[in-house]
Image 1 (spheres, rainbow, N blue to C red):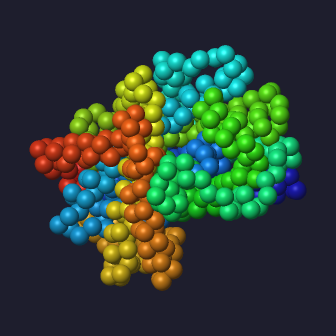
Image 2 (image 1 turned 60 degrees about the vertical axis):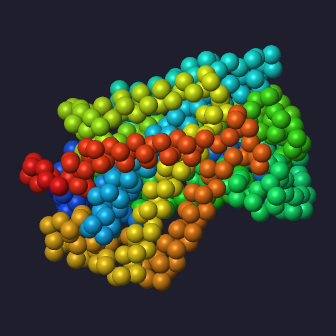
Image 3 (image 1 turned 180 degrees about the vertical axis):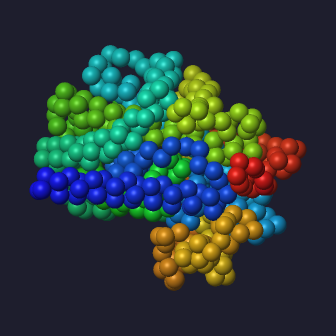
Length: 509
């Protein structure tokens, strides 16, 4: 009898778990359906997997080391920013503004893939220099390492794509444990600078007229350390219960990465040792020299550096995934050349193979810049920030405008409408938001911050730049925007009217 009761209870629990899973799947389909989209991609990501994805794309404490030198989810779709702009904009400007925002986002993510490959490749060379001081890095070697890193990201995203959620969850563990594996040796073995040096010493290495201006120009490194927070958004159509899980994962990753980033920042400033030696290191990365000065052991510094290279390499996997999904979503809405092919997904794996291939091709083409000038390639980092922060700025301004007007209704009202949060349909909050005055203040601060970053990120690092040290990101940004605008008025406006509404297999704008 006891065995029978246990069996019944087990079957009942299994049935309840199945029903809960079906309920969540049905909720995801309803959320996507109210945005006018049909489910195409497989929802393989749960909360822990997408939290790992978000944390390891942003990799704040690792990114802070790499670039160190003293100096809301209302619409859970992979489109992200351009979809939000289409629904928040005034109707007369909706198509054009969402189109430009989509190109800004696309530009930012494609440049992000290239910058990740470049930084990983040059870090690997820096590690080799640390181990063998006679090694002379060559540009073609940097390019080959770059290709290998991008290839690794592509293989994980295509050949073994079913392992991606598990891969990201495992890297989350390494991301957290790695933080302690780096910070403990630095704290225990490294030199300890006095607080006056850490908090009162400022270095104006760019020879700018004022220290304040030098501080603003030097924002790029800190901005890049928090870069890519929207990566989880572009995976939304592959996440279970996306409307709740995505914002929760983003906020958790920002909190987690923020605390670890601040801890690593303070630790590095206290143990920096010889500043001049760190800045002039042959490895090209000051953090490698700081590791060596702290532990006074070549194998120890090499192991610590290898951990950073490994985590940064793993971040490339998520960056390739987000960039390809954003391109796929934009292609689905007919906004880029070749959209008929780029919107296709593999029938078995549900992976947008063509979008992954184009993302890879763009990264490979950009790698040839390394053969001409590695300094010029550094501008790709600035370009990725300009593109993504430009898209954030458009969304933040429009959301602030809609908040002031009171145009966005409570989440519960979504059930009363077949379509929400698309042009011409009611605007409805998602299940998570910052309400009232606090929300307005948050939006206002975001707009001010984004304007400052967008303006200064295109400045050169030195007050008297040469042709070799000039920041050409403004030129590349301008050229991309000119191309997108010309393409819009000559062709795209005939087929792009904002996100495509897919109803019962038919497609309408």
